[in-house]
Image (cartoon, rainbow, N blue to C red):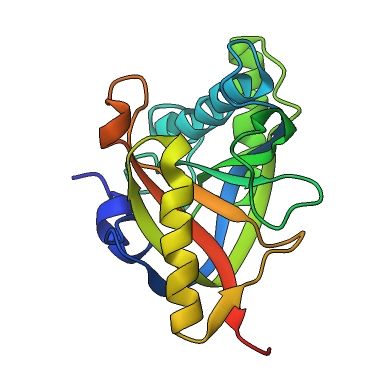
Length: 212
């Protein structure tokens, strides 16, 4: 059976619908940066998702080609994730999606090296005749965070964020947003097939102890 990161690392992908503290280790990602409203029909965000999955599946399906990646094991491609921010704000303002800056990512298995990643980009470029120059290999170590499962529409996320903020205040923590630590979402549902009120999204914020 293929290794499923969501099931094997439930502490990072399947939190409860109430806030909890977690320490997130260093992980490698396929990443694309961009800006603008993610809902724009012909916007950069939807194009970025296409680029990410093309590379993700090139690596996953390498087992059927000539490229033999050392340490490879069969796995389920991890879920789409996103880091979001707006210039001048410590959080996000959902009423002004046009101002979003984003970093869209998909986790890479630990056996994938940067050289393997470069091979995948080159292979996808040659086979699909498409420009993958925006795709990058990125390592992120989030460290101490608060997270919560949000169930419902993306526009209702502020309700969950308020609950997370209250939990932090009651337990001696505070948000620690910065240029290196961002509002983070992990998408466990396919918004094209799941009703908005049933969408499952992990919301994660970087934190620190009060006074640190």
